[in-house]
Length: 339
Ligand SMILES: *[C@@H]1O[C@H](CO)[C@@H](O)[C@H](O)[C@H]1NC(C)=O
Ligand SMILES: *[C@@H]1O[C@H](CO)[C@@H](O)[C@H](O)[C@H]1NC(C)=O
Image (spheres, protein in one colour):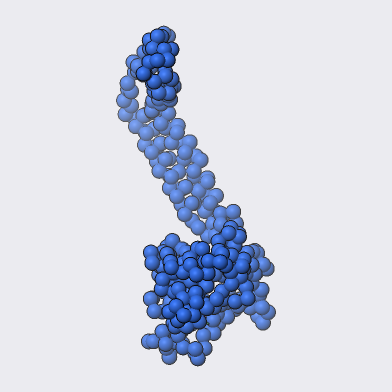
């Protein structure tokens, strides 16, 4: 570049810099067979043990899943489950026994799992009022909550929390027994700390909730602020997929292998109407989280594919080599005085 242009301030040309002139040094790798094979072998060597480690960790998580919605329906109601679930007079208690396959170390997480429940439906997800959940002065902000806004049309005042998401709160309950002894369930700290602190107000109390019309789900304790109703907070973190699990509570004692535990379920929640399924799941956790083979399998797949590619290229390189272009002719090599 011309020295005069470079320094002359009155020039309309932009100030010279290596960045604007695209003269920054760049790495221009040449994929010679050796480079190529080495990088693929390295990736294979890194990913295969990582995959095995993840699978091993996932294998050590003990998980028990029990589907109960169909078994907990009395035979006499087999053809009209909706009558059973909506009636106030039917006995919805249901007893399940489970055997612990391997020792489960505390904390043991209890989840309920719903299948075919679209919490991600557009009209459902939107039917809530963040303002109302947060601030007691915004009780009347129910415009987003269609169709669950106010009691008796508009006469009875706002429903707190309003909207379909809250209205459909899951209301099955579980009690766990070992023989005759109750196993305590810890239901504290099952929701996100940030939700409790910022999204659900500590001065907002439930009002007019599940009071008229078709009851959608669980009741709320009107003497407790929303920030302490952790089952509601967990429920209102809507799931992205139609099959989801939500944390119900925690068991803080170990369960030994071969022990039999009894779960007494109140089968309240209506999944019969839309062909959903209900399951209760018990699971331990370690550094990988719950039981999940995804990381293990995908790491192994990456490792395997890279290994396969590396082997293929080694064979090609050994048996059918093709002379690559001469890198000394490359522009940036040619300009070097050494060449
Ligand atoms: C539980 O929810 C269902 C709707 O899924 C409702 O019909 C039933 O009345 C509720 N029961 C209780 C005890 O809250
Ligand atoms: C559990 O039962 C199986 C089969 O009955 C037995 O082989 C195993 O040793 C038992 N485990 C424990 C910890 O009691």
